[in-house]
Image (tube, rainbow, N blue to C red; front, side, top):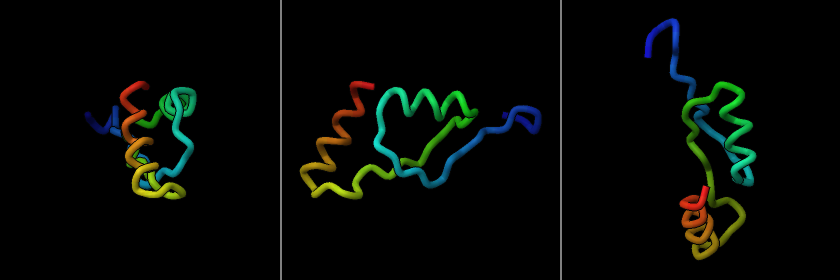
Length: 56
């Protein structure tokens, strides 16, 4: 990382995450995302959603 090649961070992102969404974010030049993943779900739903990220 340098001034010529900065690390781009999206500090608060809420989305319905899928591979196409991740690819779109990356194509926009974002390197790191702080992803909110448990907004509408209960605890079990949130854990299921987090577990599904392994398949991206």
